[in-house]
Length: 203
Image (tube, rainbow, N blue to C red; front, top):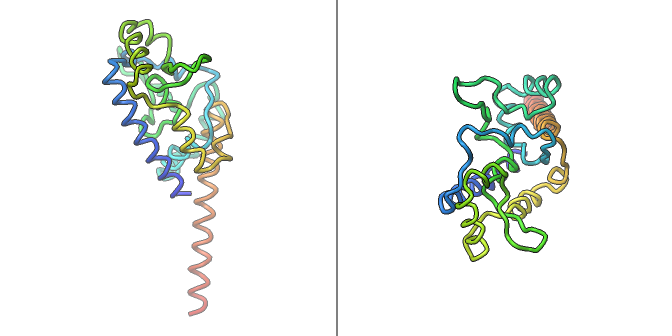
């Protein structure tokens, strides 16, 4: 499990590097203090992309509180911070451990129905930066590199196809990831304690 989590984190690190590069080259950026994509009620994600978050929560003994929050506030992602700084919009409270869907949105590429490259982003960014958006669209179809959504999902798919295909509303996937991580590590600790006891008994 830990090896799988570390591999996912390496994919995330590479993805972050590529989306950051594309953002700089295209001059596209999210609107200041915007969190509208986080407020999308039908947002879905797979279980696998939230293993790093689940592990972080478990390691810091925050997983039970997260499960309680999911049970009481299922509508929006539990990582959407409820506390606000005056004059600013609340954002992700676990930004470093966000899922792949969060990392891809805004600065990655997909293919449209005509097999042309398009930017996987929101209408707000298109409207706020129309010139930059049009220019970026022209450039990615003329050879400028853009991280592709499918490429990165394929990378984690081969780490665990079952969890990668398990798509749910985002909080359901977070809950499942927490349950899998907690079950694994709690049982792992139990097995290790049994092994230690057996060795001591033999002595």
